[in-house]
Image: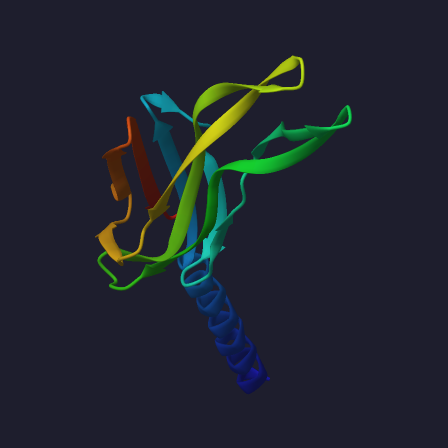
Length: 164
């Protein structure tokens, strides 16, 4: 009887310690994007260490590309952040390594074009590749994936990884 209790106790401790170790690997990944000084909504994801966070462009713009015999041809282009990153705890002290590749597409300006007798607004886009090299930081601190300044735009992308 004592042997059964001891075995059950050891089994319960094993399951508990396994689930606690698994829970310690769970990460909260907060992504902050700022374009030309304007902050975009924060994206928050909960993933296991070593699992991918996927970003999909949330906004889009539809615009007229041409007019033939009074019929407008339109195109839709996605805007914002897209791609994947993988945050990974690499040391027990809380060192985080982030790998992956992202891109950002924004509108540079609107240009007026004339199709027939009508004026249309045609967007000119700009884009930037982000996070091409692995980045390291600590749990709880902002890790800058990219600071881009060029073509008249400033783009900042930061990720903060915490344990929930």
